[in-house]
Amino acid sequence: MIFADRVDAGRRLAEAVRHLREDSPVVLGLPRGGVPVAFEVARALGAPLDVIVVRKLGVPHQPELGFGAIGEGGVRVISDEIVRHCGIRPAEIEAVEHAEERELLRRARRYRDGRSRVAVEGRAVLVVDDGIATGATAAAACRVARAQGAARVVLAVPTAPADTVARLREVADEVVCLSTPEQFGSVGQWYRDFTQTTDDEVSARLASATTARPPGHPAPVAAEVDIEVEVDAAGAGVRLAGDLTVPEGAPAVVMFAHGSGSSRHSPRNRSVASALREAGLGTLLFDLLTPAEEADRANVFDVDTLAARLLGATRWVRERVSVPIGYFGASTGAAAALRAAAEDGADGSVGAVVSRGGRPDLAAPRLGDVRAPTLLIVGGQDTTVLDLNRAAQAELRCENRLEIVPGATHLFEEPGALDRVAELAREWFTRHLTTDRGRPGSPGPGAGPRRA
Image (tube, one colour):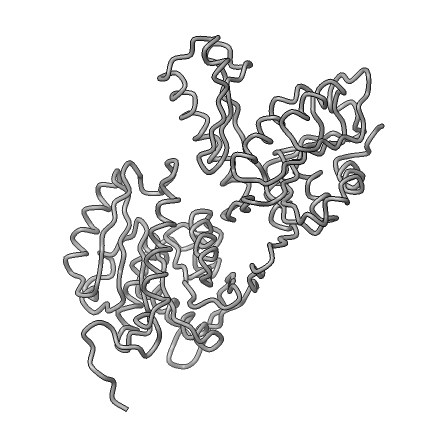
């Protein structure tokens, strides 16, 4: 059987797995080539699509021989038999794991572009690739999916050798393969067009995929928005582009103020925003400056203008969503968030502020006017910014806390560092925005009754 391309293969494979639709599966594509195939399968089944990123752990000095595999979420599958046979020492295992974990996290973030991993716990999982030769990666993916909590694992591919398919039935509950040629050769020979899939194509497929959710988890209302903000007393305005996502019943909305040289497309901020939405919070990522304004480097350090834009966007949100609002700021965006909170803080309307690797010193001398509970998150290796945050914390008169992420540098690119930021932010906003203290018009700690 010859396939025209991966789209054709995916559509034919979708017909062969239609019986799985009643199981409400999650479809996981093996990057890169398996994702276009998985995209067609997921679309036909109305199922959520994600990547399953696995890294083989190769024996030192013989890396083609794998002694195990790792996956996201700390999943680790090790063959004790191979480890004993090859005499691999614990220190060698740790070194290989550490190197592969860095690459695993890099690829996962690159492919998802800030989106969170689709949970597979207790669900049927359909692992899809564009074809299989040796089966090592597919087997690792099946084992990782099971270790991540999948209730059932089905492997589906357009083509593979018959003996490989037989072996894979030992690691998957079911294997669906459309073609098992006797003289297999390579996967590519069974496609007329086997052009290499790029990282950008993987990201694009994931971004446009159907995102079906389990019962009880309605999809958030998401929209690209234009935010009209006044820029002077005469009423002149500017239009800012943004991405507003509000899960059903969201108790609060967190607005993101990005730092210098960044935008609403920042993968770090989008990753944190995804974690907040998983906790049920709404998010607004938007550009504080127009493209023309960003061309002037001085504008990205104009904290007064950035804060004014943030306040204008806050008014825009309040006209549309009647829930508490929090600010998440990064770098110079953190200074804008604190300055805006100081201006807006007379009635406690801004419920909480989180700063990631921020420059709160640029919000001086208004730091003492901030009333919103403020969390400052700094990397332990970002020593200059850490000193600036410690000095700024001494100026704050609101409830505040400084959290240091050990080993992290300014961009929190180290394994697990950004996940820790997201965890801290989620806890802070949940605590301060989903209680009476975080609701507009509610008195804060020690506040007296409001006058009518």
